[in-house]
Image 1 (tube, rainbow, N blue to C red):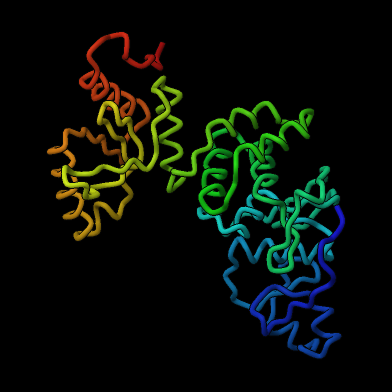
Image 2 (spheres, rainbow, N blue to C red):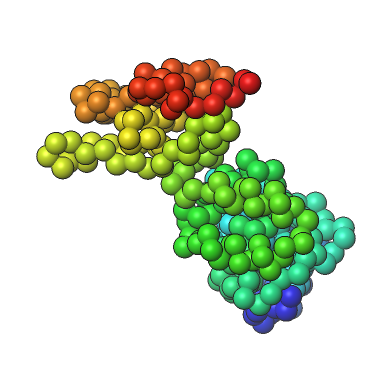
Length: 304
């Protein structure tokens, strides 16, 4: 894999994980202070006591544990690329040939080319394309698509770049599942639940909905940007988080928005966490049937 960067000292003053022996050798911290004021999160790697680590900091700490030989990959790479919805409590992920990493680190050995690695703040990280391929190969389709949706939204990830890598690693374990996941990626998803909802509709037989659908009034003013929908039918489906219910201002905005959409002829099926998959499909199917003129256009019944 080859390191992209030379040794870099991370000290307590920088507010980041650091290698304890380096900090002591440089005189930045005494051995007593290291034991009393800092916590070893991996062998030899410390953070200030009481630090609530982010996914990015966990990735950084894992790389330091590898003595700067590993490459940050998977969900950890996504975090360093700026993707949202990464669990800060999850283990860091690293391309590194080490069979028994410590708790809090997932390491695996795999072939990786120089053009699949880039440096972020001095840390070697898989590129967005390679990160997407790793996620697609290593996770179930639903989780992989949600993670890659977030990565694509945060970066300039391009489908053809990932396809090139999929061809390069055509015999890799999980590559067939990866191709399925990659075909479903849509950077328009603004949350994992929106990804989940979109995949549920596609698996139920509906045509893939367009995401982030803009709706304009007769004067060209933007009325709303809908989570997903079919413009030809003026049918939308949106996932409503708790803030739509608990925030009074948001609730009032939603009421005015719903009235404006209805006046423009749109049907908007609003989904919440309390809706079941079967109930969602039934509601969207009913709305679909009302919007279509012939039985031929009716989507496939997922129960058959």
